Image (cartoon, rainbow, N blue to C red; front, side, top):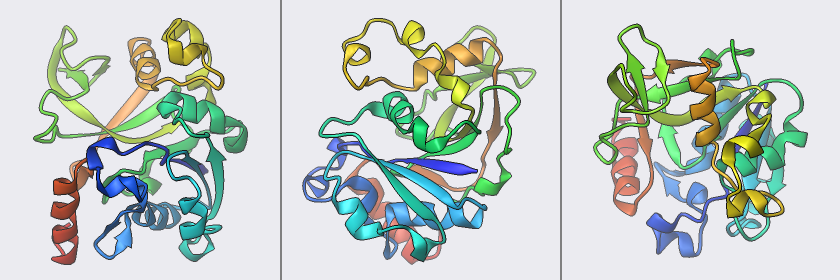
Length: 241
């Protein structure tokens, strides 16, 4: 199975650190943030990794090279000066990912999730990893009903609890089929190449019961601010994560 690491974002909430360094290349616990993912993907059996890059893009191949030191082979999906967001980035990388199901991971998170636990072939178009809602995102992303069925919104009718999307999933390329009709005529969708979020496609597929999910109760954090980066660094150096 191949994997896509989303690493093209501007990291605006992490400024001024990201003025000179892309967020996935910031160091935490003695390694670059993205290196933790590469090592964990290799441990989960992934050998081919596509990394989408835009902001300060040339720093990635200089820092990571071809990925051999991590046990993977890296191919870079270059998006130009403006990131294409998760949906546009996945669409752009699709020729590199091929026709089989693939992993996709947000590179600006940290987790102890075992990527090898995800299915090689999801039942529907995707299987997502969800986590308990962190303090900075108490409302969550998706709802779950009393029978454990995933719902498209945290406050969907019938939701008995809400959980947060961990930015980890296994997808079939079919998740992008008909993306334009789902996204609508937004400015980003009309751009060339198109820029759009994956989230509306996920919500539409959840409404059709085409997405499974699993709950990760281990460690996960969205490394979105300098404070959370410093907290994670302290945890890793102290052996708490």
